[in-house]
Length: 301
Image 1 (cartoon, rainbow, N blue to C red):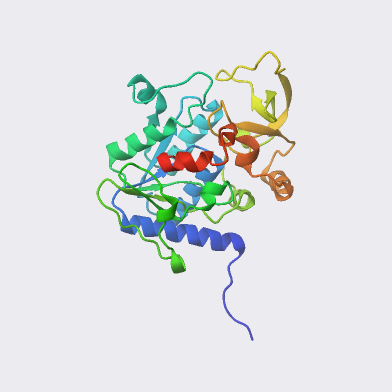
Image 2: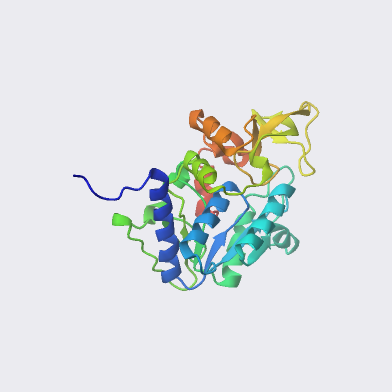
């Protein structure tokens, strides 16, 4: 007779992520969780709460604010941090622009400028481990990333210097000034994320579900008409039902036409799509074939 205990697919992913959170808490002195208010960071926060319940989270939340975020996401970010009883730090790109550390160029998004702000926040607060919500299925450069990703004293990532993670053993050794980026959701897919959101009733910003919005088309992508983005004369604005698969800087994050108004409907859509959310809705990832990897080498998320 067969006996034993078998975890479901989602339960196994959750258990792996819980193990990663606890490993970091036991190994590092000053970890921090990057929290943008997006679906991946919302799931990451939910798993982290489970990992340490009933104790409070043993680390701070950090948001790198470009200054061009959707209002709905910022409101959700603040509510979620308060609900979790967590301290929220906000590092603003605008502060680095004002201080002359970075320069904003007309017509470009602020996404690349986030690197300077992130590294400044890590240095100022002496964080030695930084949780991020990146997943391997999102993009080719992220598929190369280990769960524990070593960053040197300049915050740079070298893909050829990745450490082996045999039998899920993680190497967090680093010198002063260096740090480790940690990705607890590495092995999750977009579909896994949505199934977990459905199962655990994880709250999200309203943008993730179908709603009426004024949009225009640019480079084959639907962008929201907002105060940070001006449509061109040949880009007519129209209203339709859309949802966002990912949220970020409002100047480069696109949406998709959809009637999916709840997690079950989003799961049905996600199960048949053949484009990742970043490939379909993030204009800043279309810079070049190696655009994301180049930015990660500089210290990007």
